[in-house]
Structure formats: structure tokens, C-alpha cells
View 1 (cartoon, rainbow, N blue to C red):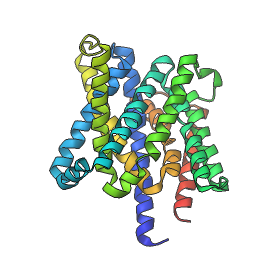
View 2: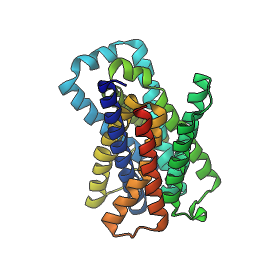
View 3: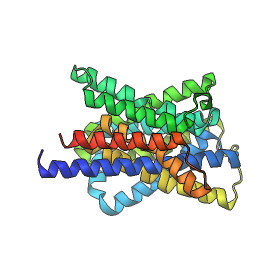
Length: 305
């Protein structure tokens, strides 16, 4: 492997991990907002994606205006961006938030992690091959890390009403789609412009849906200053930062290994909770952390193969 390729792989691993860490923080923010406000999951997703989309657009206008103009003038690209934003980013965020509302953040995270299995299956079928041993070991480590950290080793902690299960599987399917579908767009235009426009499309899709079902303005609750602050952080860190970094990492290391690194999300949520609220680590948390480190090691090993 050339030195330049190796640097790209390292950059991809770091970006993916940072994106997953921001996601973990975002999940904590979402659960806080659900517990302290009357925000609807659809409305919350719309605010996050449209707000992040505006930030992406401002940065693109300042730094990549020619690329932005070329993308929006290409009909084929525009259609694919509409699909990516509406059926990828917006759908994933909406069903994930809905899963949390029916279950809890830990259960939703466990269900979303099934997307690793979906990505591996699709990758193997597309390439007409069996899973490699390193892939299977990394898959087991990533899933186990998510399970132990999200449930603290207690399977009964997974609250699984039927609607929670349905939305959870839909979350995994949507996550699979939004990480695999845009790869040709990333190769043509770069991950940042594609993610930015896709995010703005997702936010606009949410506004249309909210207006159609009456969520706006009837369902907009009053928010106190602390809730507004948490919402702003969820937009800037948990949406703009998380998606931008994670999808940039995916563009470099590929959807399979990138999604395995996404298992860092529950790890970050656990660490942030411990540092912020003083929650002590359990044996399951430590085991999950070790398994996540093993996953990172296996991904890095594959990157240098």
C-alpha cells in the first residue's frame, strides 16, 4: 500500500471515529430533549437537518461555490442528491428519533447497529464472495461492543414494543442506504458538498412533511433556554459535525469498515454520560470499550493490509 493511500485510510478512520463520537453525544441530546420538551421526533429531525443544511450551505458558498454550481446544474447528480437527502439522511434521522421515543437511546442504538450486518451482506453479494475472516471478527466485536454498552450486559434492558422493533429495523435499513448509496457521488464531487446538499434536501423534505401533517406550526412547543442550547448543540455538533465527519470517513475507508467504526457511538455516549453526570462505569461498559478498541485495531489492520 502506498504512503498516500495509507494516509487516506488513517484520515478516514479518524474522521469516522470522530463522527461516531459526535453521534453518541447527539443521541444523549435527543433523549434529553424528548424528556424535557414536547418536541415531536419528526419536528426535531427537521430542525436538526435544516439547521445543519444551512450551515453546510454557508460553508460551501464561501469555499466551494464552483463545485456547488456544477452539482446543482447536473440533472443526474441533482436527482441522486434528492434521493440521498430524502430517503437516506432524513429517513434515517426520523426513524432513529422515533425508535428512541418508543424505546430508549440504548435500544435504538443496538437496533441501528444491525446495519453493519446489512452492509456486510450487500458487500459480499455484490462482490460475489464469502465474508473474510477479519470482517467476521470485526463484525462480532462491533456488535458485541454496542450490545454491552447500550444494555450494560442486561438483555432485559432492551425495551422492544412492536413499533420500536419496526422502526429500529427501518433505522438500520436507512443507515445502510445512506452510507452505501452516495459513494459514486463522493467519488465525483467529494464527500463534503454531497453531504451538505443532501442534508439541506433532508431538512426541506422534513419541512414539507411537517406542513402537510400539521406539525408546523401547531406542534411547535415553547422551549426554555437550556433546551434551545441543547438543540443548537445537537444541530452543530450532532448533525453538522457528525454527518460531515462520518460520511467523509466512509468515503475514504468504505461503508463496510466505516460502519464497523460507527460502533464507537455508544462508547462515546457512555463516556460522555460518565464525565458529565458522574455515572460510574460497569463491567459491561469496560468490556464494550475493550471490544470497540479491538474493532478499531482490526479496521486499522485491514487498512494497512
